[in-house]
Structures are given as C-alpha cells and as structure tokens.
Length: 589
Image (tube, rainbow, N blue to C red; front, side, top):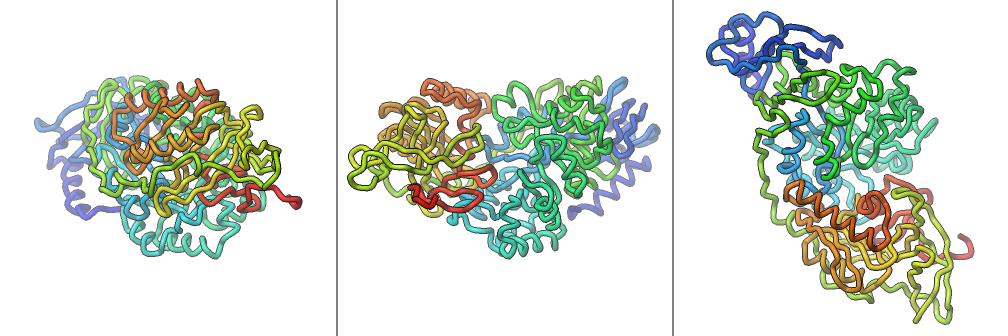
C-alpha cells in the first residue's frame, strides 16, 4: 500500500535523514524497542517529518534544529503503536467517541470486520461504515464481508461489489469465513477466495471446532489466520499448519492466559497476534483497550518486548502492512508511545501519524465526526406495527400438549437442540416459564422486511416480559425473546419507532431502552452514556430473571452461523450440523 505522494514524501525524508532539512518532531535520548530485531537500543533519536519517520539512530546530526519540537525520552522506552488485528467496529459505538478512550492507551491502528453493516445495508452500508473510519487520528483497515449467513435473504457479495471493495486501499482482505461453509459449499466460495487472493489480499479465518483433516482442508484454501483458538493445544495445531493465531482478550472472549501457556512449548511467537475481538463500552471505560491486552500477556510471563511484538510487527507483517506500520523505522508512519517502564504498559505520551495525540492518559486529538448517509439512519423497514397475534404458534387441533424443537442454551453462547412437550392453550403452543421456556422470534427489518419466524428457547432465564434488539449477527433481523406475546409486540414496535435499538418491556410498558439509530447497530453518544444505557438494560433484565454476564451478546449471537448448534433467523430454525429444520418434531426426528 503506497500512496500517490510516495515520491514527494520520500525525497523529504531523504533530506531529513541527511541533515539538509529539519525534522518537525524528534524523540531524543530514548531506549528504543526494536521489534524487528528484538533489541532494546539505548540513546536513540527518532526524527519525524510530517506523518513519517525519517531517521532512527544515535546521531541525528543536522536533522534537529530550531524548527524541531523535541520530546525528551531519557530513561524511557519508545515502542511502536499498537495494532488491534481483529475487532468489530460497528458494535454499538461509532469511531469518534470510541477513539477518545482508545488513543491514550497507545493503539494507533485497527482492523475491523464489516459483515454487520453489509447484512443491513449491502455495499452502500459497508462503504458508509468504512468512510466513517477514514481521516481519523489513527489508521483503520477493514475486511470485505464474507458470504456466511443462515439466512438466504443475506445475499452473497456480488462479484462487482467485491471488486469495488477490494479496490479500496483500506480493505485488506476478506473477513472471517466459517470453515463449515467453505468445506460444504466450495463451488460458491472458492471463486470468491480466488478473486481475493488474485488481488494480493488476505483470507481471514474462523475455524472454531475444526481439527485434524478438516483443519488441514480449511488451511488448503490459503486461509491465513484464525482468532478462534481457546487453548494452547488448538493454537499450536493452527500454528503448525501455517495459520497466524490471533489471541483474543476482550469483552467476548478472554483466552490469553490459557493460550499463552504454549510459550514454553513453542518459543517462536512471530505468528501470534494479540487482538480484542471487541471491547464493551464499560470495559473500555474501566479497563482500557490494547494496552490492557499487552499488559495481560506480560503478566502471563511473556517478555515485554515479545508481547509488544505480538501487538505491533506481528499483525503488521500478517496484513502486509509492515512497510508502513508496526515498527519504528524510516519510511513508516510515526506511530509510537513512550513508556516510563516497559513492563508496565501505561503510555505517558502517544504519537500518531507524527502528531502528539495523547499525553498522561488524556486524548489530545479530535476524532472526526461522520455524517452517515440517510439510508444508514433509516434501516428498520417493518411495514406496520405488530400485535400479539404475530407471535402466536398454532398447534394441531384438539391437543393439549405438543412436542416441539427448542433452542437449548447450554452456555450464554452455545446452544443445542432439545425436544420438549409443551402446553397448548386456545389452539396455541405456549411458552412455559416453569420449564425455563420462552418464545423467540426473528424479524427481517431490511432486505425482506416483515418476514418472521417464531420459535421457542430454553435456558435464557427470562421469566417474564420481553427483550428485543436490532443487533442480530450476520442477518438483518430484530430478535425478540419473551414470555408474553403482548410484551414481545411492544418491544419490537418500540424498536421500529427508534429506528433501531434494544428494548426491554414488561406488562406492556417499556422498562428500559437504548436507541441505536445508525444501521440499527450503533449510536454516536459518548461512551459513558452508552455504557450507562447498557447497564440500565442489564439491570432491567436481571429484574426479569436473566443472569447471563452479557445477555445482549447472548441474544444477538443466536442468529449467527459462527457458534453451534441450533440457530434462528427470519426463515426458521437452522441446525448447523444438519441444516434448516421445522419447529414441530416428527416421528423421524
């Protein structure tokens, strides 16, 4: 990725390096964490011109003059800016409020998936989303949306749309493609992969549950990485097959401590990458971002320099970006942090693209506010308000019980298929809170608005009321769960009014709500306001019996093909092993 100003820029860098032009910024007397060689080099000077590094070494000579801003880093360590190599930036917050809390910790580049905006808004949704990340104080890169959904209303990315996305310099590959889909449907997916690879871009992976022959087959497609290992054994198997292994330590998964026990068995960590896979607003406020992940690696016994490499040069090399980010060397962006103590990942000062963007934990940069397109602000297209009748499940005539297929919550994310005998009243199959059974429905809100399916779920914990959200993964669905048809209708209707969001209803009244008016996925309010809103939702759900750590995550994930086994979308139930299945259980089941 070389920009059009390369020649002009490089000539100026030549002049600074040779002392015929003054640097505009110089970090002096520093101990440099050289991630290329694994050395700590003392008494180093880093000279910066515009957004770029021109010189690194002990003798800057005439590169520093009266026009140079000096940052004295004596007795301190300068490290490259951190890179989060896998996250989902469309998960509730927009870039501007998010960056105010991310920049002070030393993160200067982020790679995000784009599947959520694509499910809602197609190509235009992805471009609007990616455009919101441009011209920011740090770098953003994205991956094109993969073709993986349990809903056939989620169209595969067209050849034209894929080509247009891959033409963007900030799209560096294809997003996480589920291994089951790749092996089951190679005739559809391999031509997509070939097109991505032919343009010199990467295939990001998702191989949860794969091992042995299946993992080998998946690797044969030239998938480059996987962020799904949850222990050292799974990580080592992938490393040995050539994958980059991304170690998650965020709000969804915290696998770093378990995985990094491999450091004694596999001392070569060059293909290990630290990522968040998403950080909640509350965790962002209370704990931080990539600085927390790197610190956790150090606390787990990884050397500070190796931990820093796993969040800088390793992801940069993987994404073919190491010529511009990931290390402190001439010709790279001037992205770096100054640490008083290399074993404590608490930046005193952060430089991004040649500017001081944070000092002593305070963000000094002004992230750009993005004005989203009208279509992104009007993504809930339900044709009419719903009533309780929409959530009825008709039973066979003349029976008082029926055996039905139920989504069974094994954990807050993993489900199984259960067959339960449930009561029938007035010709309708009923939720049964005494068995922990509630109704669950998925309603398409975008590409086939109004199409819906009503099923049943056990183990979510909701004893009364309803919860609805427009944040279903990999689909354009509102997902609503409840024990009362009236409350389910009220919750969905309120989301319709809000043009997206999360709503808890009880006894016909809204108990808590959080508007998400941008694609039904995001809001631009401050992170503290968003965190408070999510806490209010969680408290309301706790009052109604839900005890999951993150019930909104549990609800949103029920539409995803990424997590086993029984899922739901507006078209019905889908068993990820056997395919679509009916609500009613037959003798052959």
